[in-house]
Amino acid sequence: MSNINWRSWDEPVTKKEVENVEEKLGVKFPLDYIEVAIDYNGAHVSPELCQVEGKEKVFGKLLTYEVEDDEHILEVFNDYQDERARENVFYVASTFIEFLNKLYD
Image (tube, rainbow, N blue to C red):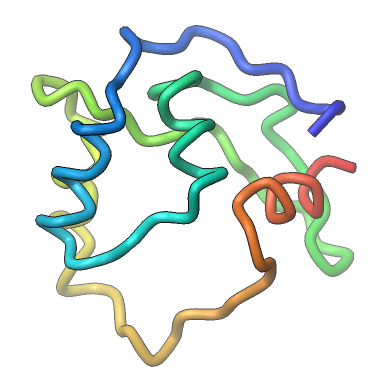
C-alpha cells in the first residue's frame, strides 16, 4: 500500500458502524478492510488509475459511512442491487490490503 495516497476523508467511522452495515448487507467484511474504512472513511485515492491484468482501471474513493452522503455504502449498494448478479463476483485477492497492493504496487 506504499504507493497509495489517501486524501479528503470523512469523519472517522466506528467499528460498530461498520458492523451495522455488515448486518444490513448480510456479509462479513475482512478485518483489513474494516481497519482501512475506520481510518480512511470515504477517502479519495491517488493515483486514481491503476493497472489490472494489463488494463487501466480507476479506483477513485472508498464508499463512505456518512449516512447523509450520496455515496453512503448502503445507498450505493441499493442503487446497484438490481444491476449486479452475485454469480459475477470475482475474487482477486484474499484480503483488502492484498487487493489494494495488486492495484498500486
